[in-house]
Image 1 (cartoon, rainbow over the protein chains, first blue to last red):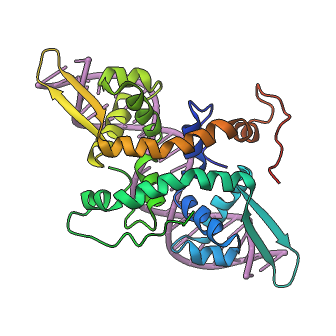
Image 2: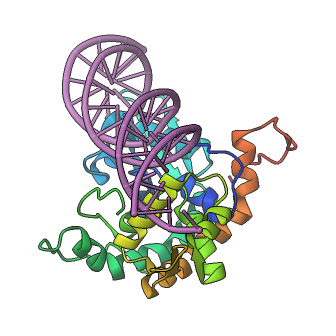
Image 3: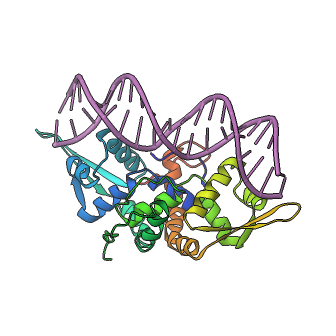
Length: 127
Length: 127
DNA sequence: CTGTATCCTACTAGATACTG
DNA sequence: CAGTATCTAGTAGGATACAG
C-alpha cells in the first residue's frame, strides 16, 4: 500500500500517495499499454527495478485496488498482473500529467543537466 | 529540485518527480488558489509542514521552474511566492488526478483504515 | 519463474535553536 | 518575517542469496 500518510487533505494528495512510488508510474504505463503482464515481463518493461522493489510496489498497488493479481498454480509458476477499473481510471487521470511532462521534460531536464539533452521519445499514449 | 532520478522514461515519470514531494501538491494547490502568498501564509495553508521542509520544497519547485520567488528588501522582510506559467500548466494537468482522488479517496482510505471512524462497508472491489 | 529474507545506504522529513 | 544549521528518526530503494 502507499505511504499511508493519513487523512488526505485533497484528492490530489491521495492520488500522489498512490502513484508516488519510484517505479509505479512506469508499472501503470506498462500495464495500460499491454493489458496483462507476467512478473518477468513487467520486470523487463520497468527496466532497472529490482525484484524486491517491483514486488513491493505491485503489492502496494494491489492493496490500493489499482492492479489485479492472478495466480496460476502451474509448473513453472505463472502470475499475471493487470489493471482494475480503478487503475484504468487512474491511468486516464494520469494522461494530462504525462503529456505535461512530455511537453516540458526538456526544460526540466535542462535545468538539471544544462549540457545533457535527449529526445523526449514520446512514450505518450494515443488516446 | 526534485529527486533528480536521472533521464526520465516518460513524461509522467518527470511529472511525479516534480510533484512527488510530500507537501508539494498542497503547495501548488494553495498557490493556484490564492495566486500569490508570502512564506508565512504558505505555512498556514500547508498546515503541518515545518519551516525547513517548506523552504526545501519551495526551493525545489523554484529550481524546477514551477514557482516564482519575489524578494522585497523591506523591513520586516517580505518574500512572495507565485506560480509560473509552467506551474499553472502543471496545475491544470493535475486537475484530473485530483478529481480521481476525490472520487475514489473513500475506497482508498477504507482499505487503509477498515475500522477507523469510517464504515467498514464499501470496500467494494472494482471487478 | 515467482517470489522471500536479510543487510545496507541514501534520502525525506521532523524538531529545535539560531541569524539577518 | 524569512531563512539557516544541526541533529535525529523513519523509510524507500538497492544488492544478493535463498526458497517453493
